[in-house]
Length: 218
Picture (cartoon, rainbow, N blue to C red):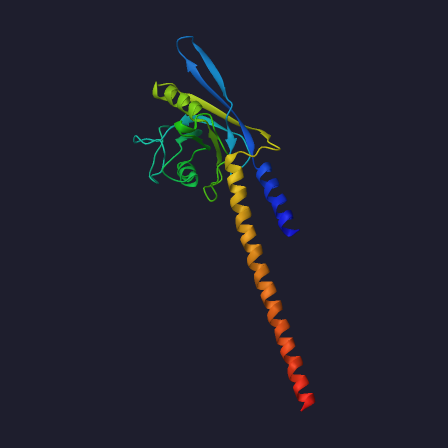
């Protein structure tokens, strides 16, 4: 019964924690002399991210690498309110987000690797700081990056969109499976300990009864 209850809690927590992010990107198009806005459809909040809005100019890491794994990474912006655009890979999500938080970013936006295409998932990044952290797809991340590299100033607005009820993607299932394995091992270990103790107590009581019978018969 305890195992089934734990399963329900884990599944509920996994489902409740999957929250979509509405991501709007805007930039000034000098050719048409107007501001162009685009909507990213793949945004997902990290499991450890505060569920709130964030906005600012988009900035990328300096120094060639876009992955922000070096604690001394700086970002290409002088704006007071800005959002870090970081590529996934080579270090943990928590390390990347922590670097962005330390540099003063309002949010960290991690775009997935090219091999993953449009896939996104809720990141685990405990201890990374209190800034908003979301993941977007590789395709959308690379599109934003191209605009920045072409010299455009890109702004981003992130809003909480909605929670997904029955969503259980590959990464959520993997996390749930690992949690259940650990839980099963703990329950099994406790059960073995409990029944071993009961067996020892039972044997000890039988021994006492035998001794009493010997004393009574002697």
